Length: 92
Image (cartoon, rainbow, N blue to C red; front, top):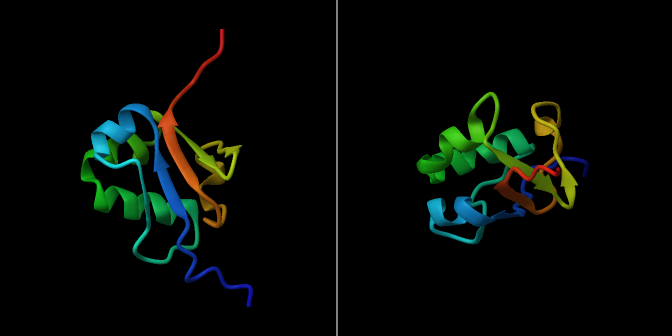
């Protein structure tokens, strides 16, 4: 046990990311260990999102199971819960 291989959590897209990808959500079709690996798979599956999600300063926010990820530090977290990718929201 202890290995993360084989986990296929859900990915959800919000707002303009949903419109750009053409889907609301999906399950990755290959196992990954980390959020970083998941983002690479997503970028391969939806190349139109590549610059939005893989840029050094992403233009989107990443929420893993309700936790807002601080990029790039959190990209190596295990991909064990739903990953939501949406617009950056700023308060005022």
